[in-house]
Length: 148
Image (cartoon, rainbow, N blue to C red; front, side, top):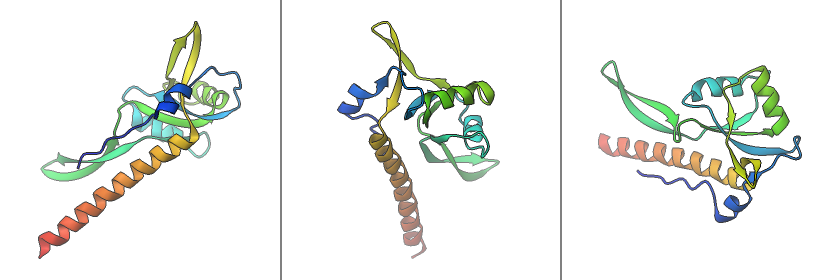
């Protein structure tokens, strides 16, 4: 089963880069962790210091010591979406996990941060979760047919 993930709509691309003037506004920031998603997830999920985040994952089958085992792995390596204010993320980086990096561009001589509008991110998360549920349903259906 092949799934395509469309992260940005046409309107999203036009409005997804922001110059951080309001450092307390909560946005979905696109961030990089450079192939260290597991550590980032551990740190971001910490009850004391953690932030709301999303890492799109998919289930893959791998062979470990001769046995086939399913693992959840990132769909897009090194990519993490963090839902917080710019200031809160900066504080988190300085005090707890410096390897988390903002995805930025320079536009017109200004540094801009890549963000995803709340509605688009909500839809993206739903699509990712729905795709995972469809895979489970398909596998269960196949297993039942194989028993006949």
